[in-house]
Length: 214
Length: 214
DNA sequence: CGGGTGCTTGACTAGCATCAAATGTAGTGG
DNA sequence: CCACTACATTTGATGCTAGTCAAGCACCCG
Image (cartoon, rainbow over all chains, first blue to last red; front, top):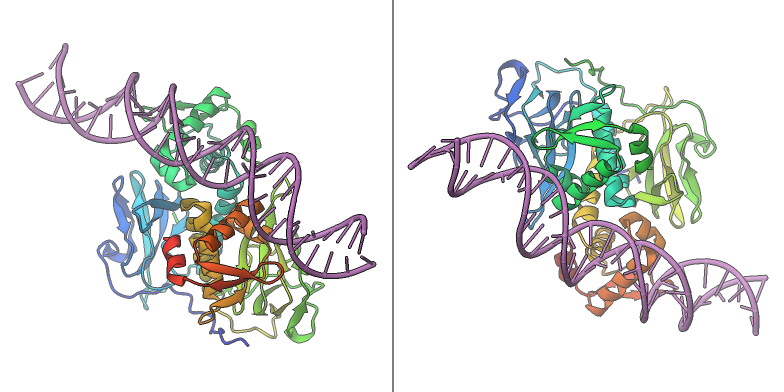
């Protein structure tokens, strides 16, 4: 028994080589244009990142080329922590985005609680499992809008920034179904959609929205 | 920027009080009967566990009383690591099971790589997301059987131990659909089912099974 | 023997995917 | 300024998949 024990405290991120994007001097902020790639599957994992502004999508491609978005990371959230030292997924900016890399240089050991980040991401992933499996398409979309609303507390109007196909690939639905769900939410007077791409949500009835996700 | 930084090295499990089950003297192994509870939602998290034999199901209950199984833990796998110090889910033995608790006593700090455990569980959760969202019912069941088969390398016959409703609640399907998928796998001559409860799988065509999960 | 449990099968239905097309907006070039 | 293309979103029609409800079977135990 207990063959799997290893020693504590190997709590710095793996990977030592320098890559294209983490080449930024002294781990300073990086500005990204919409859809710009941060890292790709198969690359050497050499840094973790914190979002300072904007949003990042983390996704994988299936054997059939299907995209599946594991998570969206908003301001303050961390991403890029991997089990091994090779990337298993892709990271891209959703919109105009600003991120801050943290490399694992031996001399500049940054005091980051990697365990806390990992556990937070685990909790997010588990919550997403519940959302996806238990609920109908409408409830999934409602849960998504609610998740976005939580990132803009006190604002009743905010820009989701994600396209319909981003949302579809995140919730395991099709673009058409997502669009239909948004019109249903509009018909129910729970929200209004503004902006040329209909990505700006104005929440009319937050309580009703929350009630839908239960 | 960077408000969320905290200090490294708080890598011991939270919780200091003693609970009913971890009261076992000196963190020795615990034997469990089928369906015996290990911990429940809302309890104080005071230990993490490693499975020595058998299997454990980790699940949550939705507001409507629906059970959703987040993961099954087999031999060698760890569970019970939480973000806070309160349990957010339930843990039960699937069958006759043996687990080993690790408490967070200040004097007996066990050298466990909690980060590695957290990242492994994160990877499992992410993989499960892909299985659930991308695939049809048949593919999900195939993926499940494959997952079980991976726990019994070189054996072409093994006992899954989980009931049909366990599998259904794990894959986000109904019992009937799971049963239908198993008959399809039988009809395709990919496996045979033995035992009084039809839980013993005999793999006839492992390659075909893997091909289904892609 | 009867009742309980777990698995399977059948008939029917609701909901989402699929295919197809329309709308709206921005950008380009005549 | 208008025609044209390109792209994102929306809407409509149709079919299939999995959920629901119901029943039947196999096994076990009192």
